[in-house]
Amino acid sequence: MGRSRAAARAAGSSMERLAADYLKAHVSRFIDRRVRLGARDCGDLINVETQDCARVVVEVKNVATMSLGAWLAEAEVERINDGALVGLVIHKRRGVAAPGDQFVTMTLRDLAALLTGKRPDDPLSGGQS
Image (cartoon, rainbow, N blue to C red):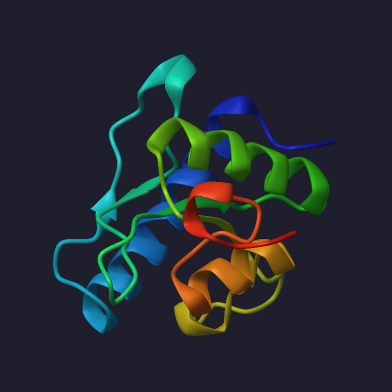
């Protein structure tokens, strides 16, 4: 039997705190968990940015079964909602407790945007598909 809704919510919150605290310690002291926004969700963490101050939307997951396609689709909707450059997913690595050893998943398009500062699919940024 799967975990209860309350247990699942607690696991998700715990993973969000783990990711936020790790990034706060190693990237920026301003990174933290985001207050829930409802229908116009903009990710689970706030103040995650590239070195050029472009916003990065982070979706955090802690579930037993990976669903990468659905998670990336969710991160993309949230990226658009936030007007961010990149959307990515941090997800729990089963059997691994160390925060820095958790998984991060993104599309190749988002990786290119993260590395160059412009989205390849955005005609306004001068990129090409």
